[in-house]
Amino acid sequence: MEVINVGVGEIGVSNKPGSVVKTYALGSCVALIFVAPKHNAVGLAHIALPDSSFSNGKARDLPGYFADLAIPKLIDEFKKFGVKKNSEVIVKLTGGAKIMDPQGRFNIGKRNVLATKKVLWKYKLGAIKEDVGKNFSRTVSVDVDTKEITITSPGRGEWKL
Image 1 (cartoon, rainbow, N blue to C red):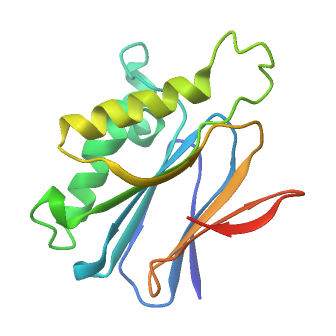
Image 2 (image 1 turned 120 degrees about the vertical axis):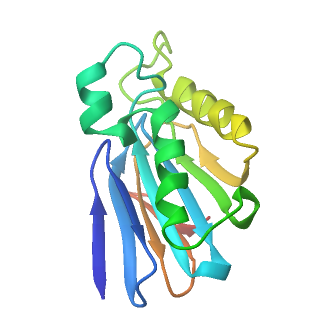
């Protein structure tokens, strides 16, 4: 099995049988997951911040870092698999936790989730399922063969999205 590891700000896609797209330690970050069953394709963006307007360099080098850039980039990647309409894509979200911010002053996780949903809406997309918020990190993997999304968290076990 080939594992495609997706770091913070990166985007990973695959339609290769036997492969898994995976990202680790989502705290306030959001994993935006695309699945196109008809095209046997899966993809994941590890989004760290809601908006690219304040960071031109990072926006250019790591478009997956920002919700406003990750979504159009992921859509473009799926076009390479033959996806012609956004309606062919199933969207799911996880992450966006409140980590190291007990009073919720910054709410980066919540802001990431809301920004991601707002940009999805702009592209006439919406998450059909999500596991967001709370106060713990998550590791997420998406299996190309089964399209199954598995989430794990230390001390909390494993569950499906």
